[in-house]
Length: 333
Image (tube, rainbow, N blue to C red; front, top):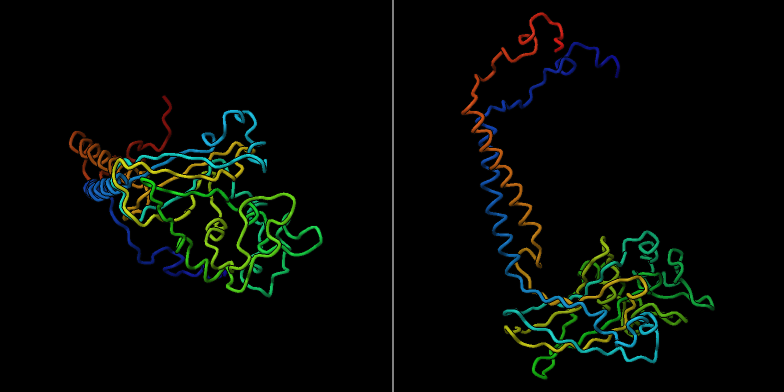
């Protein structure tokens, strides 16, 4: 290898053909103008699409706690004697065309914690043959008598268990649970021959229970929950309302407030949202395009002004360092 670089070749002498564009003032200005004129319309279209999304967000974790339990919220949510039914009323701001997506949002919930993310066993989830495989599921791996928990691990154990029922003018709105999970997850990560066993059977119940007669591949609430979120504030799809909701309609929501977010000062929110071609409501993409496009146009205008006010010939040798100081000595002021 050493001899290769010592050979007098075009490669060792750095004489291979290469693209060496001359960044003339005109080329730089045209490039900035081109980027600005492309990015700004994309940003405006993205913002318009985001603004067309109709969204209702209702934080209910504190509103669903009786006043006498205001200072003892953890005791209220952990007690088996308290009534956790809660009624909320939502107003539709403008027409929401179906499907209307129902999400639950959790704040200050770190699903990305290393020990939490590792507390699952993918082999067990995929195949009945690995039902007893719980090596990575601590501390929710086995029952007190040593029987394997299926599905094991903290992620499944902490499954969200608040429920929502919707009605308009005393007429119930059906919430569809079909196709709320990724099809790739259903087909590849959760087996059709794996059934829940010994799940939530211990003394400390973490969250929702599972139907032991249904395979994991059909339990879409679990599949959605087990795709862990990267950030401490996240939304997960609960279901879909497949009818239009008219403007100014009053939606009555019957909530079973079961999930304990009070112990870690978390927040729970119910979200109803439509979608657009860019997905849900998110202004970041549009703002990012507008920012970059506006910055490019600003720089282009400044370069034009500099080029017009203080022009100089392209490739002027007088600006070379050895021509600006012919003696070759540093000048100290």
